[in-house]
Length: 69
Image (cartoon, rainbow, N blue to C red; front, top):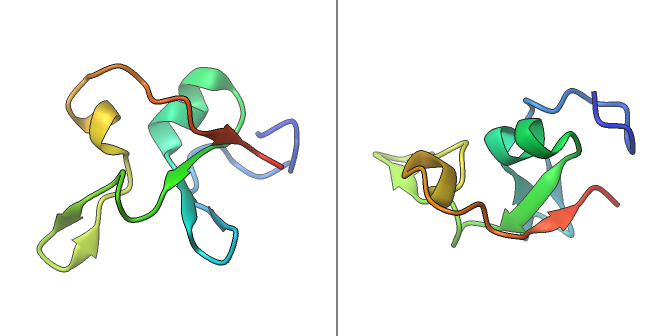
C-alpha cells in the first residue's frame, strides 16, 4: 500500500489530468506511487498502453518520476 494515498502500489493510476501515470514496478520498488509522463514514458503494445514504464520493461535505470502527491 502507498503510504501517501493508501492505494495498492501495483495499480496504474493517473494524475494531473492524465498527463502522468504510475508505473507499478517503480512504485513497488520504491514503496510509494511513482508517476512518469504519459504516454511518452510508457509506449504501446498493439492498441494497449504498457503498464510498466520503458525503463522497467528494459531493466534500465529507473527514471526519477514524481511521487504520490
